[in-house]
Length: 421
Image (tube, rainbow, N blue to C red; front, side):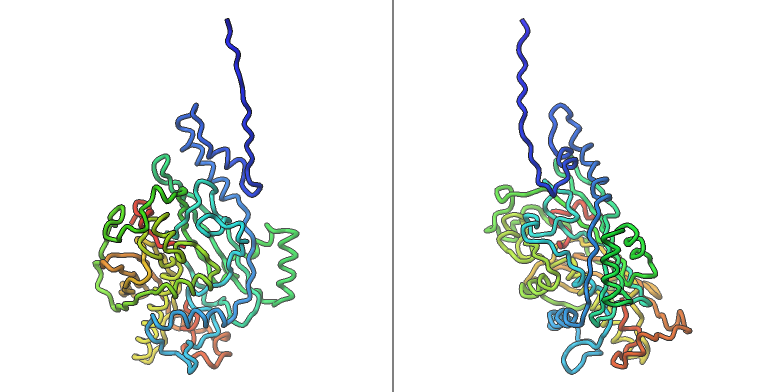
């Protein structure tokens, strides 16, 4: 006797903003035990083909001065400070592009941890951390802080999946290119119109290297959703935290050391300037109950800005003592290796390792690396004596000349490792 076969169709409804192909690839399938790892490989194609919006901004000194003010009690006093307490600059300082060109997501669109969803692989990878990246500052095409329109293009250039099945981490590399719109507001209207009618052609134009003031690659890590019941309870003390942190201590003798203790207020201010409501910077209960951290975490971009500005002020102080021109910061490549916490001391260090190379890092309370990077500096006056620096000389308030234009394996430590966005 042949037994009847019953088939039940279960309705599946996905949010309209979530790619159905990606959702199907993430669903478990008991008839294919290896389906999980193979299906995640589809994420690469999904993300790298995703079209991200073009972002417009009008950089002004207001935001830059607000960041100067937020950092004033923490960084060495600059040699070029004005009577108002702000460094003299009409140009975007290195790293300050991070407070411009924010992603304007609606609150209803944010992921559970408060981050924007544009680069997210989707559920269950809804937690993100800032793992590192690299930046190149082009001194002959800088952004001027005068309210002129500027533009930023963004694309996902690479995706890597690491970790065992069920505990994968998705590393997403995001390329950002920023540059001025020389034609002002009329050109801004033209660019927006072209972006609507022919976005691919517009992106090709904006992605020319000679047009860009800053080219940035940031590495973001997405991790699986976590629930409070599986995490370290908030009442657990720091000394009894879940897994011990691996400590890598510097072996290079620094040319400068600058200690500072970031406050929760500094984190709140930087979150506001970057339009960033990631809960790990704002909500202690979330940090402890969900992420298993003992306190608020310092932003990855904030630690980067602090590292660049401390080096820049050391270069300018040295140049002032020798009555010479400070070299320009041209590029940085960095990794976030361990978290930095609010209300805990960290030490910003740097050591010259070559004629145009500096090793920079931040030590945590235990003396180990929290952030580590390599910076390239360049004396453009010596490299290109024919260059007239016309854009700089037209601004008589800038004393430093071109100085004002300065622009491990983290996977194993990701749960406790990188500073977060």
